[in-house]
Length: 133
Image: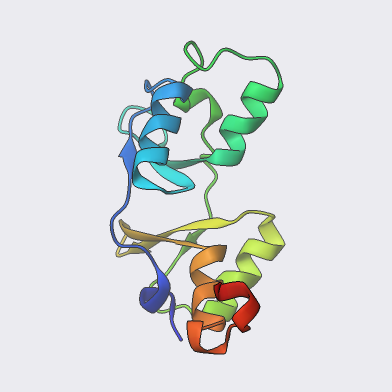
């Protein structure tokens, strides 16, 4: 199975001047664990995740004051839609992260997460009945 078969094609995109609170609210409303940060003036595409927000709040930083751009990962590993899920999982394991921005011809076309991969590898029909009730 390929990344394009598992990825989410509706991508939450925010700007670097969104506060962490705004970022968290948008992520919660969309029920996603990551957002693409588009900074046309500096780094281009980056990613901010729920983990980045959690680390900031855990460090005592104010989510009303902290900006997404300050907590954005800009050295991003991008996946191709034609990567296998094994290649995506290997990149995530090697890099220690749970989300990959999927780009096709340098344009973001989706995000694939560990959860997306697990859904493909463990279809509902194979789940033990104790987990479905």
